[in-house]
Length: 202
Figure 1 (spheres, helix red, strand yellow):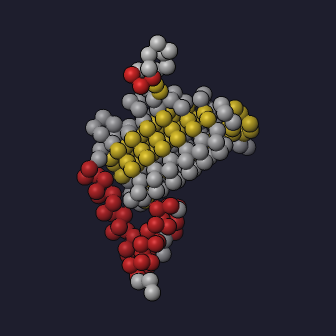
Figure 2 (cartoon, rainbow, N blue to C red):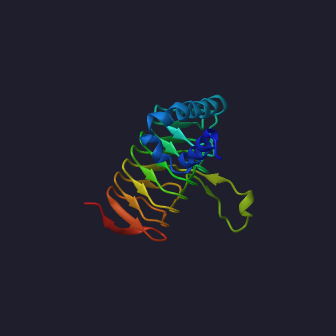
Figure 3 (cartoon, rainbow, N blue to C red):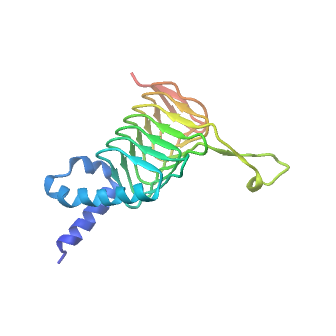
């Protein structure tokens, strides 16, 4: 028969993959869940250059890496799911959610994500690019970085990609699987490869 420890371990795994459930936990679950999260977050603070706000959830399977000058800043009530990869410099505003397998690398100029933005499973955001000169192997060429800026209340769909130098305005929506290579105006809905305007939130 399963023990209480088995049920807790299963519930922890459920939270890791569906972190939005953290914000509706019953009091009886908070008795083990809050110390568990405190331990995870304290360890990150001790080992990485990272600031974590109040009321956050970070899956133990997430991989967050911040160095001096390339830190990670996490606002209040942010949720970060299993298998997420974040390399600073990255700033996540309050109430941002990163679902499973999101990948964000801030390059040297950084990625900023505004308050309340939702980033769905498998989305990739990279604030750097490789040199492409034909006379030299790509692996030996340097990288450039302009940064990525994502506004507040943005929804980035599953498996979308956002390339270096892009700004996405407040309230915009990026469709599932889209690849965003140019700026998106506030409230615009974009989709396709490369992404184009397909609608607007009204």
